[in-house]
Length: 401
Image (cartoon, rainbow, N blue to C red; front, top):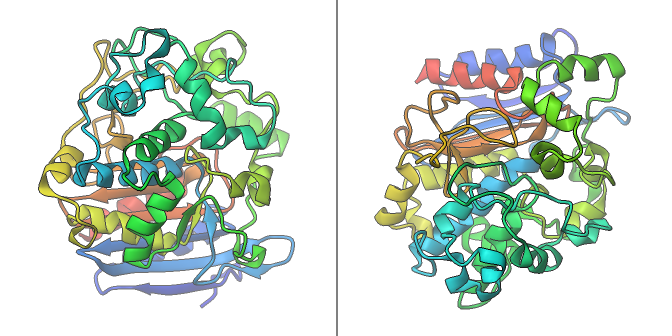
């Protein structure tokens, strides 16, 4: 079908989920959507699978059933899922010190940092200025890991947390490589242990054989007026932090050479490396299927009840509380995920876990409902969590349950 503004819409919703389709259409007619997909699995069965619009504005190429989309920081959640599977296999203990598995990590006073603290963004390794990132290839896990191992934390570990926007994926990746008996990279571990068994197409490091014709073209916010409007949505302390090059905000998030600019993710160099902090690419249906498998216990993957209990636990804040000193808002982190809590509710309860991505994408698991959720788009909004298009779909979904 086509919307009243001639946007093509495809897919299905199960009976009882018609409101979700209505809101998906409204995203195109009322909220400026260009191209997007939205998928939901409940008890490992698809109940929503919608896609529509255009994957590329200039060519008017339509978003197809198998279109692949870049999901930026939502990639971190898939990296954390891989590590949870390593936990289930007995490769890693969340309460063991990181240096038990990665001896070089003990440099500069980091010998007592636990895996749990690291995954909760408490380790003080968020800043970029000492990492010597001179080209895009320097973002690859193999190059970034030694620099992170040598780093001194920027704050007292466990005192507070701050979003490790560029580095958490590499830290997770190194833990997998160090503990996996086969010494696989995260890219290979994820593919062999999660993507292939579930027949779910998601990549952390895009294979060369994937055609560009299957990819979306990402559009950032480039118009000055839109940019100014977006800046007004930032937390005031974050905005002030961006204005001070020496602040923790700027040192953690500002990319002087613009390697993580939106347009770079339309090209192979950054998509091809292993950069699990932000270069994941996949089908939205596959993302929902993966989270759905974990929400329902992932028996096909060998996820055990002990790991599932860990994933369901509510987040434990550092001593100074949930305030994130990089994002400058309250966030609940646990085991590499964002967790449901009062300032960021998603799912039925605190058992829910997932991760948003720049521009508005969001993927999560709701174990209370056995539900896997994924939304992604190619026209970016400003910020990360609670983008209006995504939030409208999420609210509609839960009103249908």
